[in-house]
Amino acid sequence: MRRPRPPVPGRGPFSGTGLIIVCLVATMGALLYPIWSYTDRPPTGVDVLGAQTVPTRYGPLSGLDRDFVTQVRLAGLWELPAGQQARRKGTTQAVRTAGEHLVEGHTYLDARVRDVAARLGLVLPDGPDAQQRSWLKELDAARGTEYDRRFADVLRLAHGQVLTVVARVRAGTRNSLVRDLADDAITTELDHIRVLEATGYVDFDALARELDGTSAPPAVTHFPVPLDPTTDPAGTVPTAPGPSASPSYPLPPATSGPPP
Image (cartoon, rainbow, N blue to C red; front, side):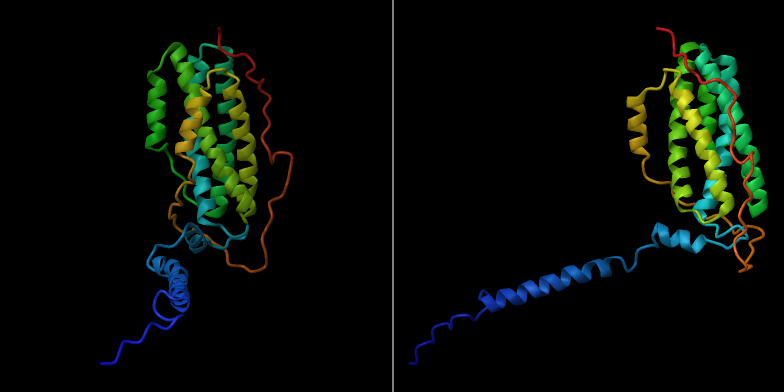
């Protein structure tokens, strides 16, 4: 009987050659998996934004641009009445002054956003959304110092959320009307943030927790195409700068905090 041959060094699945082959197969699998795993996924946010961009005579108008215009309108629809309420119900001069700034700023911004929407052919909402109505109802029910605290906390949270959206739009928009509106919105939002903080009632720990839970950018809504998009390739029409391009605030800052 012939004896079995001893294994030849360097062969077999656990030899050096076998290990090299196994490693190569594993590497190819790792490279191909991401391509396979994303094949059937929905389009990304960038894809959605690109698909929703339409040409206008003021430059391309993206889905995010249209969402921003709508958000500016919505902010005024509830923050302006909240400011009017604070002028009546605030127990300190700081809270009442913050209310004055909200009325002043959102009266200006609302006129600006309606002009921009008309020039871009966009339809704006005519009432606050469900969350904003809930905030107004909560403030309406509060009294005394509790009202001051809820006013400062709720409005400061809302302004922080809006400011992140405005900054994102301002950084990336290619539409001259939207760019100028974002400039005005940033000026207004920062002024309101400062006077709300100056009331002394903002709970910064709670604010950090709330903003951390809503730090993701809002989903882009699929808005209809503007009513009158212009495909004229002659170029973008810039907005003419002027002395009224930015709001002014003659109101005094809210420098006095709550009583001890």
